Length: 263
Image (tube, rainbow, N blue to C red; front, top):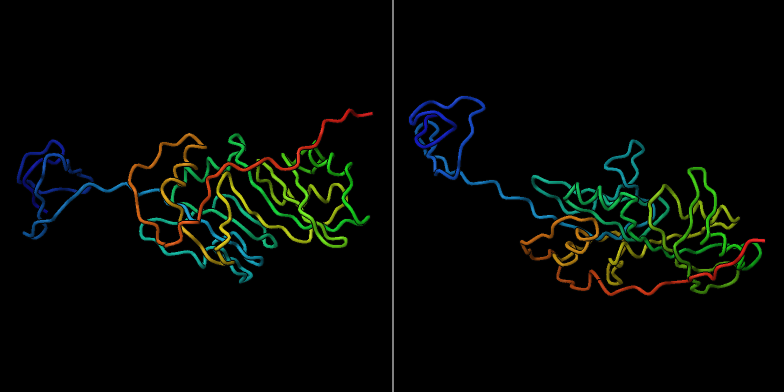
């Protein structure tokens, strides 16, 4: 490969060797077999985020020895990048799962110190017919799990029929099967679990199970701001036409138990 221009500290017109670098700011001319090669600075990849409605029965791994369906199968393919899941949902849990092309964003959002809220709709089976005030108090003030104490930030009753009742619960960490284990700790069985919110990103009502939707730049920058990353300045066109993919409206606090003194 011959060259004219500036490469490293070498003089012009010399043969380049493996490891030589090109200073593109000096407009070098590089030829291979006499043909001029166009060079340009590598463009920084824009941080992209998808909202995916995970159905039950899919796992959050890229592949599975048992041949089970994975959440990555339905995602759009990328060139020179890959989708990284922000947290996980177990095989029996459905709902909102976020993916990004930015590994640093994913790592920070998953770190407990940022306390990003996750809200779930939970259908529970109460053996006594109703979830008692004492059980709700325990769940919001702390129950002991195998990997340490845990508590819901909030709980709100959503109704139900018979022994099956619906609640919305909020947590700020993502331990394995944490929501299910917390209910089990007060002797209540979870029969269905659906994640409906991550931070202020809501599961779009128009999004069908197994489908994805790309977040707009404002929503991406909301997530980046939550973990101290610089905002994206390059705008891009969403690959979907549905602008209702994201709601950044403040969410009202759910069930907030009154403080009680222990006897």
